[in-house]
Length: 436
Ligand SMILES: CC(C)(COP(=O)(O)OP(=O)(O)OC[C@H]1O[C@@H](n2cnc3c(N)ncnc32)[C@H](O)[C@@H]1OP(=O)(O)O)[C@@H](O)C(=O)NCCC(=O)NCCS
Image (cartoon, rainbow, N blue to C red; front, side, top):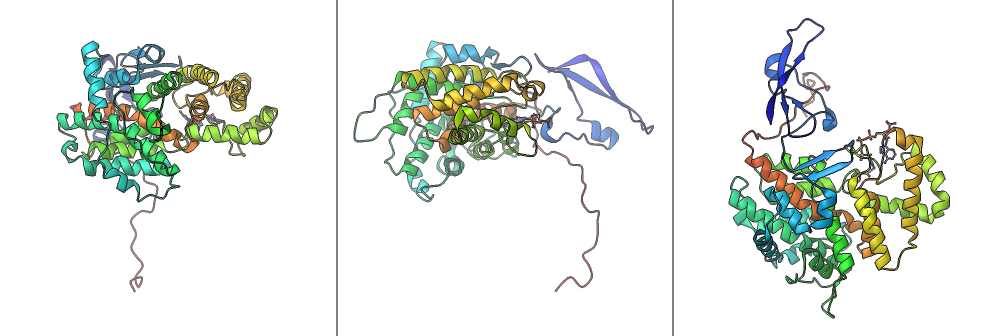
């Protein structure tokens, strides 16, 4: 970041002395006012719950222009990456800052593929869970549990450990997600097969059985790979900030990523695709497209507590570029599977059409986000609804790791420790005679 020829001056109406604060510019996006000395100079904190105006770090990984509806990974537009690269190219890019050349590409693919197996003991750990446990509950445990299996890569301050942990996590997440699924349905685990692509291997571990050969469908393979690319990183969102905050204490990378998995689970974040599909199924049960108008009235009624899931975003105040790509993939997958007349897809398109014309959504700049169509694609592929967020966690692992590594390598990094505006009881004494 560079100091700009500008400063912010904060003055107070009560006559307290004003303070000057430096302003820094990034390469694109809003400048920031450096308030780090504010408390020392004034004895006051700033107040910004939800980080509406606060940059928590400097980062060179992902940039979102919410007004334009633009998403860049290391400067490359998401549309170009989704069309020209595969997920592992995207992982390399996020981790290393640039796209790989042919040799780097081959080496990186090989490296990841060679780490897809998990310690056999993980199976017995998994057995401790109920078969009907939510996959995100299982994944939070399994990912955290990796630190108990891979002691040699748990020092977050050692770059070599961080590199090894990054590769292990990217390579093993598909195996763990597929194991969580197989455990739930009571089928044997499928060991990874390293001559398949990253997403092809995942499809086989999910839907293959030891009884017969599994043939990977290239359209579904490409669709899944695109889902992974679109979810790979998204700058300082709730789960990424959780990973940074958790990692800032010096905890090991597996523990920090497990914290990210737990945060992602919430319906306002990664759980939105599951919530969106449940919403579409609910409307379909109540009459489908004919009931869309009625449902929209509920969404607009603040007292109903009903939201149009898959719509709205803290940063995008325009069409989420990932939603467009996802809609394209949705068309391709449904066509491939002969499901062009899928009623949920029709319903989603009708909801989108109405919302984009409705004053409520237009005035609040609410547009479809990536989750609006990703649930329909995943369901068509055969992924159960309660595993959608697990797929998101698998894809986002690389983003979490890249952001964690960036934080640890930043000389300005400190343990994260927000302040508060205390509104509770002032000091008081335990009543005499309370002790029994
Ligand atoms: C993503 C989300 C949490 C962003 O929240 P936010 O930045 O805090 O925005 P707000 O909740 O302040 O929303 C601004 C306004 O739009 C409304 N709004 C936002 N998303 C809405 C939705 N999906 N349906 C109906 N109204 C919505 C809010 O009620 C608010 O209205 P108001 O100004 O009259 O009070 C929110 O849009 C949401 O819950 N969306 C549905 C869940 C989802 O799809 N999440 C996935 C994100 S990738």
